[in-house]
Image 1 (cartoon, helix red, strand yellow):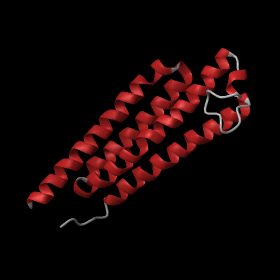
Image 2 (tube, one colour):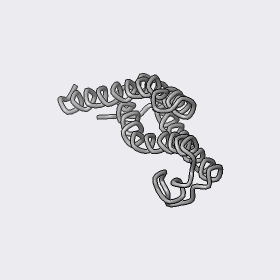
Image 3 (tube, rainbow, N blue to C red):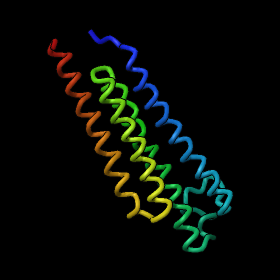
Image 4 (tube, one colour):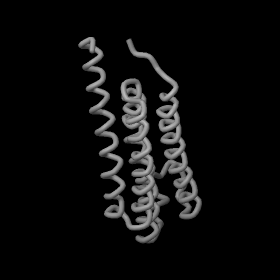
Amino acid sequence: MISVGNSYAWNLLAATVMGLQCFAAGMSVVGARKKYKVDYPDMGSGRFSAKLSDKDWVDFNNIMRVHQNYIEQLPLAILSVLVNGLFNPIQSAIAGDVYIVGRFIYAYGYKSYGPKGRMAGALISMLAIVFNVGSSFFGIYNTLRGN
């Protein structure tokens, strides 16, 4: 039997902040679209972005990639912080917070220094996801075994 205690609220908070952080990354793309005049549905390789200088194209695409990468990772990050939170609420919430910090470092590094600038944040956020996914499977396994 799985029961949810009050400490699970920390997992809910971490998941909510992850969603808000992804939304903020999306708002950065909206700002970049206005700044560089890249209208929808151009994702950085269409007619509008073809008119950009090389530097502006790289800057726009760095901002776009931060958001797209977040969208790619967000389902697993949120799912793992919520599932692992059923078994290890405090550790899972801490890993969720580490993920959030890693994503901030990732975004800052990518926007400021290009693809190589994202590496520290990518490592931090990936380690947090791996911890939460691994702990989720361990908790599920133990629950199925009746432990």
